Length: 363
Image 1: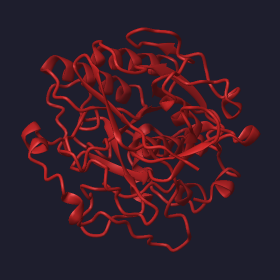
Image 2: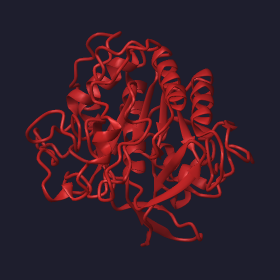
Image 3: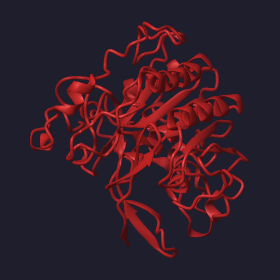
């Protein structure tokens, strides 16, 4: 990815990234001084910096870890992480309302980028879907970006979950080391961008050593960090302009664009920061949802699949993946970066099944 070279131009300084997740343990060496106070909106709050799962902490480390004392080196070590705790494990609660409160809090406290490495897999009521849409609308109206994982359900139903299917969310898929979509990565028209999501070092849950992880969670964190790097270097750009150059400079899929597997391609912030590529274009037009009018009932995503479409998806679609691999069109080595979170663990949380995915292998 050329991170060392990119950091000469931008480390993400001046940008706050909100991590809506299981909390962030800021006592880790690589996260000391990187994490703001935040707030806990989970069912049984214990504080935004208490993370019994480790998922949110790993997301924060991939985004903003400094590598101090042998810790994880994040992609944007200059950003500040705002921990906004939405859950910590199995429990009950109104998840849609929790997300809405969390999104509003993130915006109110200065987050320009919001990372949501979680997916609601169960169908939602009209009221709960509206709550999520209201949150996304407020993010858009406040000139911020939200990156949401598409999920890791490709080989077990390929259900298109929330909020990646709603207008305003930037759905992120996972690719492997060759730039091909990961077998687990949920696909469909909700996929906007992709990022590496396999073989990523993370903290082992039982303590000590590193564990290899995979999934769309980390791919989402990489996309969020990439946006922060670009925004830090171009602070006068709007959210629409940052997203537009990310889409323009992504390593494009073969065949139809956008691809249902990797969207407009694999994120490559070095193309913007080192090579000066990308035209920011119109400040007030969302490049992903050009007809999107936040707050209007007519705001319907052209890429959002119906529930019947998601229910009938072929679980073995990975056997034939047209447009699933990316081509490096410039040969300069800036095609890929690395990160992920893998095999699904479903949590029953109120209005739907909340999923983050984790696959660990000690390394």
